[in-house]
Length: 276
Image: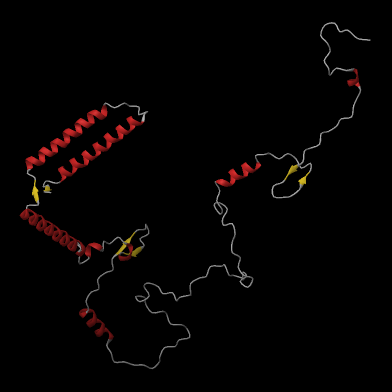
C-alpha cells in the first residue's frame, strides 16, 4: 500500500527508528608515523604535516654556541681534579713595609731592657760647640706644605700635584726636536720639488699658468656649475623611473667633480700644466 504525502515530503533522516537509543561509537584515531623511527605508533595524537618545515625554519637562523655557550666543552682528565683552595686568588709575596718619611724620623725610644753605658766622661764643652755649629750652619729651607682642612692639617706640596713642575723643566717652552727634524724634511722635499719643476721648465715640458688664465679657468668652472645647478633644480621631485634616477645621479656626480676642481684651483695660486 502506497502512502501519499501532501505538501513537503519529510527529510530522509527523519525516521521513527531514530527515537530508539543507540550505543555511541567513538571514532578511532588514525595511526601516525614518527620521523627516524621505524614502525607505526597507534593512537598517539595528531601530527601536523608542517612539522618538518617548522623545524627547518627554526634551525635556519640559528648557529651553534650563539647564545648558550659552546655546544661541547673539553673535560679535564680524571687526574686533574679540583683541589682545595685551587680557585682562590693568590696574593703577592709579603714585603717589608717602610714609611715614606722613615729617613727623617727621630730614633725610637730605647726599650726598658736596653741599659746605657755607664762611666763615660768627656771634656767637651757642649754649650760652646752648639753655639759654634749654629753660627756656622746654613739655615734649612722650609718644606713647602699646604693646608686643606678646617683644623689646620698640613701636607707636603710636591706630591700633591698642586705645584706646577712642568714649567720648571729645562726644555720648557722650546720646540721639540722631532718637530725640527720634521720641518727640515718638509723644507728639503720642497727644495727638491722646486728643482724638479725648474728642470722641466728648462726642458719646456711644463708651463705655469698666469693669474689671468687661472682666473679665466676658475670663472669657466663656476659658470658650468651654475648651468648644471639650474638644470638640476628643474628636475622632477619624484624619481619614479630608472632614466630619471640615472640622470639625477649623473648630474650630482658632475656637480661634485666641478666643486672639487674649483676648490683645488682656489687653494693653489700657482698651477703647472704639462705639455704632452
